[in-house]
Image (cartoon, rainbow, N blue to C red; front, side):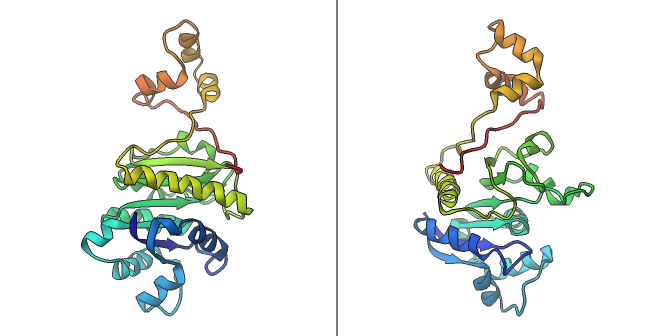
Length: 242
């Protein structure tokens, strides 16, 4: 499906290595080559891991194959690695980006638009998988951040560190595989279920219109009018068991 799969760690590297291992063992069918964070450092000739985002972007730029091969490369990043992956996709064309635990904000700090503003413009197919209660951006992020139509969201009952049992990783990997299958088939990526109850509770006028037969459902209203009106909405999280 892809020539290469690059995994980019968060700032806690080399801790959380289990995330890379869990993904590589379950996503082997996606690419003929898997390049982890330590491989990337070696290929770039870097002595140490850096948390500096521009330096990490330059490092990836040196290592990622040029031309058509880059356009057949999948980037997967967790936390700050997700920032690097998505920002890189604004610099050079890649096949797709997958973000785990995207750090939209630092908890208990003012918003930093440079963390997320590019996600409103990104054109590369991008899957963002978040924990429902992730303090860096949870289930309510659809209410707070403008996202490009190229971005697909997926929510699971996980924390930012993605410490999951095997069946949890099976579920997350299954979501990634489904997204990549949609990309390969050139069809729109499947979005998580619309939270009908939340939408109708939040917009009582819409609920009344649905009751009176003006719309089939809250989701019907959102697709016809709500999105253009920038009404708040939420998606339903998926079970960690599948």
